[in-house]
Length: 310
Image (cartoon, rainbow, N blue to C red; front, side, top):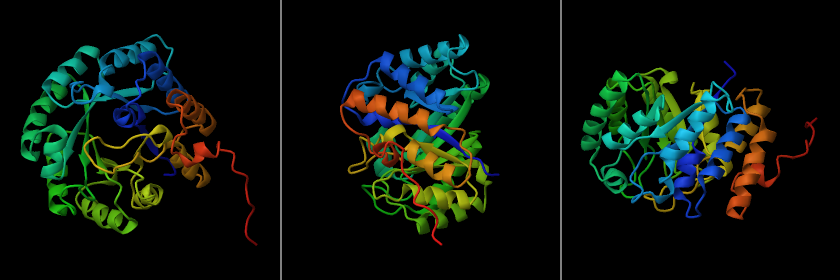
């Protein structure tokens, strides 16, 4: 199947690390441009305490406004907006707003888990089991994130058995998909092949998504290797925005534009129009008064063909 699905995380994972305030109006405009480009799955915010992540303080109002635009047919009806939910209070807000999908975040390192969500791995899953039960009762889909799967900024290498155990925990609570994260961008093609061969020995490829950061410039080749291994869903961020406030040195997520460009030129459908995506890139660049990391955005997407080698 020559087709992939991109989960756009720029409005949440991308903006959460930015200090420049972005109004609800401008975030909504970004959402409008992203969905107009053909992106169907957009993670729009996080219902976390703004004390810990100030940039996500407006997520509730933004999500309400975005869902209203779907119901009023200003946005395409097949767009799915999801939110990250850290606890039961966050889930209650998501339920009140009316989202159809939530995301739960867990770590594969005890140190990172404590730094990021102030819970041990065991405590986080205990909390998520309660949320999952409530979500199923209200027919809300659940997506799982597993962070630092290829390396932790505090503990270094990650025991593969921990990843396998956490995948199973998510599976047992009824998530439909687990996103495997290279949170600090340390993975190489060999690492990707080794981990996913292990994961795919016990689970179908359709159960996984790839979430790669481009800290060392390896995100695109890691996505390509994941695709060759059978994955068809990848998390991407407009402009390459992102990073993690709790992971020292972690730079942005892989840029949506760069991933679309790569797959387009391989004849693999993403359903996303690159020229419309670049409109969003340029708009965000103006808001931040700087160029974004996306390589295709920096080139304006107008690379001239060099011709074939004869």
